[in-house]
Length: 315
Length: 315
Image (cartoon, one colour):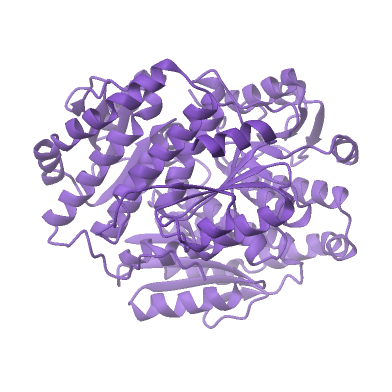
């Protein structure tokens, strides 16, 4: 991390580009908020097909390109990083396999060191990716509050694990007719991740929205068949999110809230004591537990979803 | 358009940033593919809340920022453009109201000239935004094939309008239990737009996916209750998309295809004769017709959805 940060500081890149797929793409969205807010650098999420299928990706010689792939084998993430390096971009790989093709192609490798991922859907590698991004952001622009938060992280994650019985209760009462997951700012990434896990492990067509986008259009679907899971952290959206929850309840929808440090009526609330920039870690863990217990309730094995393979083979 | 393009060429920006909400955000995604593939410039879609809620957006002095808002009044799009201009960025507004706040804040204004939008959900302003982006891309890197395609556009759009009876038939047979809209490359933007219109006008929780992302994870939800609408154009994804359609049909899902220049069995197929970069225009029109007829079939007024207002007031 320190070496990658030194190179980035030395190069002063015009912007960051993050290339990822699936869960890693949600981690990338966390990175976008983190680097744009904390490090004030513009972040683009790569559209790999420009390069891999249209044969003409953007010029990136003034950029820093971060490829994220737990396996290090996603071919289009590898392709974006390899092409960027050929162009002269600074390249960084975040991967759980430092011997992977992605790691070989990048100048800097930040290993996730999550150990072997035993379930097919990414869980601990997702959290490890969030952590790696937070460490990189902190290394680029150190801040004592974030430093202290990083020190409290192990305890905060243990506290989230202890929520399991309450999350199991939440899963037991959750409607499954029509699910949406709502979040904003830093929790937009965890909302996307939870929706994906509900799809992959519960086969429920859950959809993630920014609370702002949801309120503008898709709220039209709100009715008593809707279950909205709101991921809430103490931060600039707390009051607006709470208002949306009230609105949705008024329309007859079921509203389930996972709240970190944001006391909300009827919520599974915890208080990690972390700066908001780090709350996606315990929230991500709580979200994974929720998907896991909903899958179990539905008689499914969350570790081995049908039709999924471990490596994102984008063809 | 010409003046904006001259300024962009003179500045050689490190990247483009597109700020938009709702339908305009889907147009922005089209712009991302267009500018990255055709103009080889990296495009980031703005996360306005970094600035508006966390009070700390990215540094953009080396970038060109394009704000898209049909009304020109979306406060967070205006905020991103105004802040970027203060920072010294080159700023461009795409709006249907040249007297709007967004137009006032930007150095260059590209008026959509779509006339008054009569329905609440954006339709002709969406197509006009795609066209404005295509004209800007062409002005930056002129190409005779695209030029010829732009000349054929009015005819292609009329041909799409003539599909209406067949699209009405398609809408009549469409399952509504669980809908997804699939596309890739240039059609990812139209897939997102169709999903949003199905939500806003039919109150159906449709979700858009890249065919690549869908195949990796969410395909786990495919069963006989699923209806997949595939937006297909002649291009690098044609064979892969057709294979996915076969796979989905094999899993018992209903597959409905709108195909431009890509002959596909059982599809509502047309042949606009346009270069793929322009096919989102007739495809977007066909998608709007499909949402319209499905709403009518469901006894709803597609022009006046419940809970929607004209201006994206992100609070």
